[in-house]
Image 1 (spheres, one colour):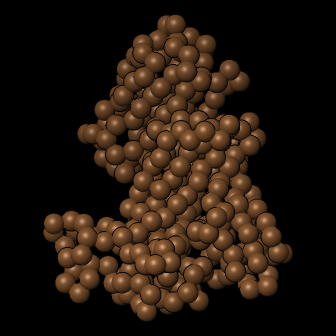
Image 2 (image 1 turned 60 degrees about the vertical axis):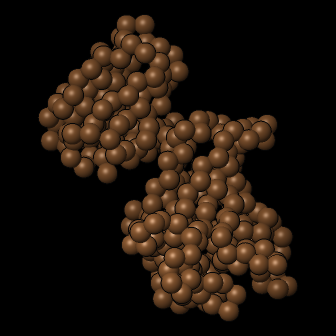
Length: 327
């Protein structure tokens, strides 16, 4: 059995391996063609569902009134125009992980991202649209300024992500605040203006994700806060960071990735003779060595500095290597 023992072998393997079984296992919108500083919201009346990477996105476009809902994609860089004419821009001004394109969501009924088969998602990046962020920051004719005049109003803007199985049964929900003014200390209040990674690894294998926005600012006709957010780089678990495997790949999940303090290693089939775990830093230095005998295992990596590491997992018959990132 061949084992990686230094960073040179690991990095070399990155260039020899293709994507997992030939499939693109992230969805980052950069595989969709756009002119610079432009957007796409559909091309014909009705459904204009589209695909990026391994994910499919629902979209509806009304050519009569030039309105749309669901998902669009964009690379608009305007971070200062606060009206609805700038509804296609993200507050960060660039895609997540310094990419160009990103997705834009407008809530009005078409809210689904789905996959061809049950898929474990490690997470995705989210941020506010420029329109929603500046409206919450300053207020306008329809929406209040978050925090009110004193800054003490406990306002919030919440993204709810619902996961469904292949029979359309709801599995679980993950919530993430795009803005939160409920803190006792107003200095902690925030309106998200950069990309943040939302960990979805706890959802397990899913078929569909649905998105919903809610706010503390509501009126007679519903939510006053502009119902937009931006997303990017949907990642399938154990995909982008898989850099070496053999044909009889270990059936396991490693999450979260990126991680902060701990990494979970869960086996679908328990290795009879245990699983040997080695973690290397980018220079090839062995950082940690363990043997796992359980289905669910936690690696404590609190003492590591932020950066890139490689985790090598070996059994009597299989070996697999992943890149993991500490933030």
